[in-house]
Image (cartoon, rainbow, N blue to C red; front, side, top):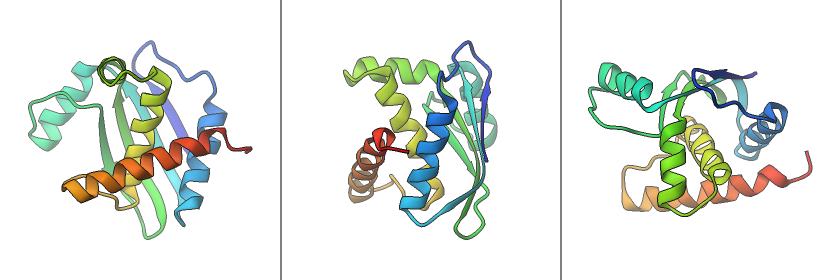
Length: 139
């Protein structure tokens, strides 16, 4: 089950399409979904989580809390819509593309992918691009 929660004015127009896409992403990596909770918020909300739970005092686009059990994904994924907008402008991509990149980035972390080294970042970017392409695959 994938739940979408909104703590900001932003709302996905097509929750079912996003759910189907994320399910296909998981299947493509040999995982199933137990429960994923996407929580869309603003910078202030996510900064407070970053400070309180991770002792980091900076803005970020996503924080993922991992409750994975084997090959079944469970997690809470907090996404700052403010960061998505700013990053889309900074990287000269659409808001929609950046949103998908961040949403799948969190799921890839739950699957064990990292972004702590140069080679891990390269692999993560490759996987993000690969999985974004699945969004428009017939579902």
